[in-house]
Structure formats: C-alpha cells, structure tokens
Image (cartoon, rainbow, N blue to C red; front, side):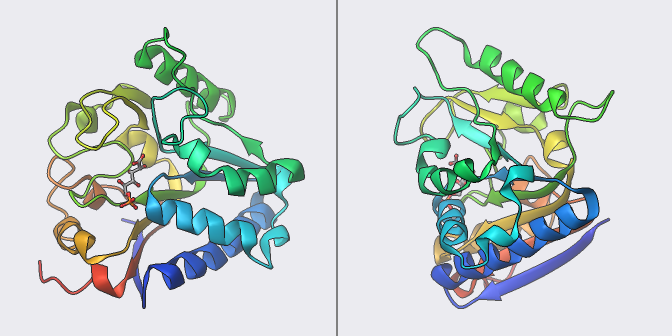
Length: 246
Ligand SMILES: O=C(O)[C@H](O)[C@@H](O)[C@H](O)[C@H](O)COP(=O)(O)O
C-alpha cells in the first residue's frame, strides 16, 4: 500500500498555488531521476486552477518542459475547440509550455462521425506507443484527479459500468451523470499506473465525497477512494472539504 498523505489548505486559491509549487518539485525530481516526466492532467475547477497557477509560477521553468509528456485522465467527447473540453480549458497552461517543447497528448475530439469507442482505442494506442516495450502504459510520475461531489474521479462514476472495466486502458463513457454525457476516460487499472496519485477537492460540496472516499468503501461506491499511487497518494484539500465525520 503506498504512503497516503492528507494536506489541508485554507482555501481553494491557496490549494491551487501550493499544489502547483509541489508539482513543479515533483516533476523536477522525476526528471532528475529519469530524465523525463509523465504528468496526467484532470479537468474541473480545481484541476484548471492548479494549471493556471502552474503557468504563472515563478519557478515554472525549473522543469525542463521539453522532457515532459502531458496526458489527460479524461476528456469530454466534444468537437475540437469546444469550450467544455478539458484541453480547451487548459489552454493558457498549454500555450505556456508547448513553445517550451512539452509533448501534449490531447484525447481525440469528436469529429461528428467517429464513435467514442474508436477515439478511446486511439488514445490507448498513443499511450502504448509511449510505454516501455511490452507495456501498455507509460509509468505516470504524477496523476492529478479532481474529485466530484459523488466521489467520482476522471470519468469513473459510482455505480457506472465504466468504473468496473479492467479490459482496457481507455474507455468511452456514455450516460455520464456529469454533463456532457459522452466522455473518454482512463480506467481504474490505468490510473494505478502512477507513482503518485494526487486527489484535489475544495469546497464544502466535496466534504461528503471526501469523507466517504477516505473510508475506502470500494470503487463502485466511491471511485476516489479506490485510486492509489504505487509510491504515494496525496489528498490535496481545502478546509471546506474537510471536517465531515465519516
Ligand atoms: O472532466 C471532468 O469533469 C473532470 O475530469 C472531472 O473528473 C472533475 O475533475 C471532477 O468532476 C471535479 O470537478 P470540479 O473540480 O470542477 O468539482
């Protein structure tokens, strides 16, 4: 079982700044150890706030972005440029690091004809191409996950069939309880290919989900409580998201 750590910050803004500083150090450490870093991004308010803080951080370029691979844990299956796509919401950060050489692996957008299943397979192939020989996934150094009010992570929702999938690394998710209804998501086994999993939750609307997840009731009930890094699992919270007894 990896080491689990809970860090609580005063509010969502400080959480984003502190997590960005921590992430820069984690990426620099990964590059010092292995020469490269694989970072998995998440959508949602806290994920996007972290990326905005990262883009503006004075120590941003302590990371050699030319040796960073950026992936997504999930994506809304919408046309390219749609403002609801996670990659579009991360544009300010991507516009800052792409010129520095970051390898940005966006999940495929909907093109009006390709089924989401085919797009999921394409991303799985992209991941496999970046993996060690014989592996299906690169080892992710840090995998970021926003936590939903129902304790979902990525696009793996409680009681949803996609959360139980173990036969693929990337799946299409239909009938998502969180709009839009069609998404692409890494599966739970794929999320476990991370050295560090960082779970981000801020606001009192997340307190129930955090309290439930931390009792580890299983992925079907609380996917956020079922994801762990092989080396470390961090809960990055603000005060409003803490304090509800389990
Ligand atoms: O595509 C998405 O919607 C996200 O990847 C999703 O998993 C998100 O991280 C959580 O729903 C938390 O979102 P908030 O931080 O906005 O509450």
